[in-house]
Every structure is written in C-alpha cells, then in structure tokens.
Length: 502
Ligand code: ADP
Image (cartoon, rainbow, N blue to C red; front, side, top):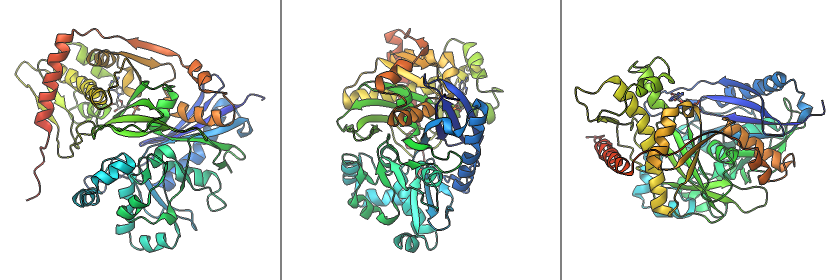
C-alpha cells in the first residue's frame, strides 16, 4: 500500500488510454477505449469532446483497479494528446459547443489559401516556424468562429474557452465549471500557428491575421509543472506534465541529446529529432517545433517530419483490396518474394506531407508488369513507409546538416521485422525498438514524475531505457542509390495530380 505510481493519459486519434507506471518505468496497467469519429463531408473529420471526457472518467478508475491501486497512491498524472485537434466549449455549461475538428480535417483550406494570397507566408514562418497549412489548429478555431452561428460574439464576450485536447481534459480534471484550470502546454501551442516559437507566447500578429479573440485562449505553460489538482476520479492528484503525443514519444524514448531521433509508426509516421536549445530554422520541408520545456528551464527544440500514410496503407491493402486478412500478415506475404518486382506505391491518398507538402498529390502504383504479384505489392507497401522516412531524413540532412546514426522506433508497425530491416537498409542507420512500446504514455508519465520528484533527473529516465531489438543496415550502397532514385521518380508521378476546379 506504500507503493506510489505515476498515471498517464494518452488521448489519441482513435482511442484514449490510461496507463500506470512504477518507479522503474514499467507498465503496471493499461485501460483503453475507442471513441467515435465522424466524416460528415469529404475532407472533414470530427470527434465529440464530451464523449472523450466521459471515457477518461471511466478509464482512470479501470486502470487503477487493474493494478490493484488506490488513487491516493498516484503521485502525479501526465497527459499526452492528439495534436492540432481543436475544441471550443462553454465556460458556463462546461459542454463543447461544436464537434471537435481533428488534425486530419482539411476544411480550412480557404482560410489557409487566403493567408498565402495575402502574402502572409513569410510572416507566419518567421513567427511560428510553420508554413500556413490546414494541418494546424489556429485556422480551425477561425473556421468555427466564422461558421457556427453566434460563436464569434460569444467568444468576444468571453463566454467560450478554446483549446486542444489536453486543455479540455485538464480543465475538466481540475474541476471544470467549479474552478477548472485553463492551460495548454508549449508543444501543443506550437502547433496552433498562433504561438511565437521563440518566446513561447501567443502572438498578436497571428491572432490579428486569423481574427481570433485572445479572451478564449488558454495560458501557455511548460511541459513539466503542476497545472492544478484533480477532482474525482483522481481526487487530490497533481496534473504535473502535458505534451503533444509525438513530443511525448520523443520524451518517452529519452531523446534528450541533440541528434537523438525517434519515429512513431502508426496510422501515419512522425519522425522527430532533438536539435537542442537553439530555435532551428529548417527550410519548408520539415517543421521546427518545441521538443519539451521542463518547468523554468529553457525549451529544447526539435525538427519534425510528418508522414500522412504509413500503417493506413497496410489497412488499405487489408480492407479495400482484401489482399491480406490481418495487418501482421503483410510480412509473411512480402517475405515470399525477395524484391518488389519493379513496383513502387506512393501513398498520397490525401496529398503528401513532409517533405513534399503537396495537397494535390494523389496515390500512384508504378512499374506494373505481368510479373508483379500481390506479394510484390505487399513489399512495395512496406517499402513506401521506409522510403518516406528516408525522404524526411534526407530533408533534415539537407536543411540542418544533421546526419542520423540511430533511429528509435515505436508504434504498431514496429512489430514488422521486415519493415524494420528495410528501414535500417534505406536509412543506412541502426534502428532500435525499446522494451516499453507505449512511449507516448511513458513520456507523459516521465514529465509528470520529474515535476513531483518521483524521478530525480533525465539521467534516471535514460537509465530505464531498455532496447528490445536492433536492426543494422545490410543494403549495398549502389542498390540504395538506385532504389532511392526510383522512389523519387515514382513520387514525381504522384505530385500535382488533382486538377484545379474548372
Ligand atoms: P495508431 O496509434 O495511429 O492508431 P498503432 O500504433 O496502433 O496506430 O498502429 C496501428 C497501425 O499499424 C495500423 O495502421 C496497422 O495497419 C499497422 N500495423 C499493425 N501491425 C502491423 C504489422 N505487423 N505490419 C505492418 N503494419 C502493421
């Protein structure tokens, strides 16, 4: 009964998890629930923030019960969340006033095009580090204020609160209507296109450009400090850490030194590399972002390459083409041949993210001949994830002069050994998979545990890291060169495919 633990919530795109960790960073329990996603029009993706909050209220006691723990044994709570998903709620009813608009939603393209047409791109990049894109949260907030009746007046009157998912959860967990704390963390704020990346504060020029009233915005806080104290279901427990999910994974993978990099392979893939205390200025192909800021310490920065489609291409092979019955079976099929038969698949189903950033790109399969079988297609699907990662790593090398020696990986796709070997081969770098695969929750727990002194310092956390598997490059340099050139040619076919409207 004297044992204390750290709890973490990972509020993800398809589900929310609550996990409990012990002092060695080992998992004690995991409870998980999926929530609904709705796609009311092409390019739209919505969720119900009230449903997600109801899930959190159930998951936390479930995780505690599984581990046989009482909430008084929780030393602190950390939160990680899907980033860029935007929620607006009523401070007097405590309910969301519109569906949450998720990070995949592209309805803000007119707002973004308008910023670009006004010549604001350089200004936006100088302040936020980001190119104007539909990916970020600020334009979604603007869209809600413009399109939902009465919201702008109510926002200006101070009746509404804005936030990303961690803001919404922290407000509710700390009492909601009854004294809820309205904060965001600097990693989530850095993805709104409203924050000055150098100062870590909301920027008036950006608020003016997007016509967003300051009244509803949360205050920006570091990733490791006590934001407030929970009411039920974690009565009395301090919320002591919050990070966007990809930054949480970077932290959970203990990428604390400049040059340390991780990539999370789930639906999409997100590669972040720690770049140290100076704000990085990469070109437009990869994004500068805050990696983490701990209490009053100066922030540490990262560069991120986001890949829209990775595991979702495997799902497409399974669900749309019905070539494999389950995702893991892609490995058996792909291993039945020893090359791709000349076939390449570029999964630009909804455009390409880093490093190409072409929303008019569409998917292509090239190199088809009568020789190509479903096994070659399976191989090309896996190679698509490897080569997309290679493109991001090349962009980082080009823009920042950083060479990757080791890539730490996590996420559902990393159980695929063939893919991990392909990655190591195309990157010409070691690939390492840690023992604890739930790096997002672990990162949030680590931030919270550091704040309350449960763990003393970063070195202690690094000490907890155990590598479960390592892959080393085996590909001949000439083959790598030829195959990378072929991949680039394949991508050329995908770019700019969508015709402008007549
Ligand atoms: P998310 O957190 O984005 O929901 P996960 O980390 O749970 O994703 O990973 C699920 C994704 O990984 C799915 O898109 C699935 O197709 C893919 N996946 C799972 N197992 C394998 C495998 N053995 N080989 C290739 N892809 C896989």
